[in-house]
Image (cartoon, rainbow, N blue to C red; front, side, top):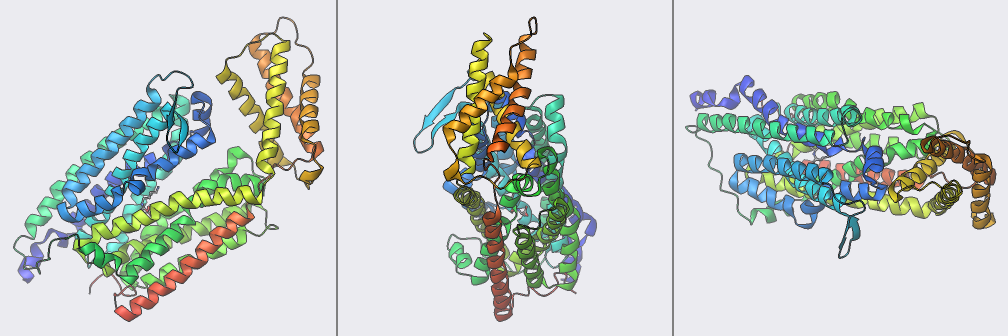
Length: 562
Ligand SMILES: C[C@H](NC(=O)[C@@H](N)CCCCN)C(=O)O
């Protein structure tokens, strides 16, 4: 037996760490593509005429097939029945297909304004729908690769540095996110908005190559263990799902996962706007503060994983992470703490929490669920997490709108007045613009006014009941046209349009600040909702620790067998 164990490839640190790096590289591109278009959003708006809600549809598409068609659950079952090699290869190829469809959708020359009408969804731009379908296919591949990689790491690292290996795997993936945040915009500015997607496509192909390389190592591992007398595991059967879902500790981890990730990922989604509105940071810099988070986790997740491997205390680590989550969101919700340095410090602490919990959560699953059921178990957890990540942003949007009922209508008043100003001025000056160019000019002027007021001016807004909407609209139009005056003779159309843009911004700014229209979002209730998610996460972390004490899963014990 001792002789046989010595022969297992798992026993060679070089072999298992090589396997970890190679299999993790298949996730690198996935995390890159996940965030590749976020920094490019303003360019998509001006180049393709995408609105924020088009972008919202596209982002949510990641989970469509996984959640509505239960693809994640099927992926988990396939993984447990057919194994790591076939599932991983299929999943990485699916990511290539999804990214390819996405690239095609934003490249194909659809006629301007082409739309499709779908039951339940309504009208949607053709290219938004097709790129969303591409992203949804990619989402199936990405999540399936994620569970496959986790199972592969358990296979190589059980009884060894499993949490460190999972932490490093997450770091390699999050380097992909960091790369997207760092280079997507420069790529799009230097080449075209399609460049980040083309680059993602290349990374996906490299991901397939990485996975094929992993298959070679995995086959060698299987061969090296052929003669080892290990207890034969029963093959995975569908009734195993019942065993998984009747395990209390499994549910505590799954619920903790959705609560914890639900208080981080959707927060990141809203963070830039929250920071602009609450901390008066310029929109061009506000994005830097939330981007501190993924960078921090790259170093800290493996660090905490290493601690879990050697010292144990997995359930306690999750409790500490949940407490930090409550502290961060609790402080961010206090209205008087409105200095941006404080917000940056809170994001750094959130980054520590976001390293602590995942470093202990994912390596704890194999202590609760047998290896032959792990694919399905990870898949069910990711499935519940995906539902939460779809539902929580919607809920946040509802809370934001109902606690700030006047902000959106006031912004519409500004937009309408700016539109009327453009229409009148263009008529007076005999300039004809196509609908798309006019729309872009109106959007740019409106968001320019709103951004500069939110960033630089603080006032107690006039109560909505005292605002005469028609009067405000007319004042904005009158001030805009008055300040614009008559065009100078011989000036090019381009210069006249430039002048309109800058003049309308100044003139509209004057009226809106004089009338003290409420256009600043107060995120307090949304942040309190995140705090509540943290409190519930803490509760489930405690329940998990108690269940571990009762059932003896060993969550508080080190992973490395002595
Ligand atoms: C390991 C864990 N992965 C997940 O949560 C996956 N469902 C992928 C999420 C993709 C996020 N854009 C993690 O990343 O911590």
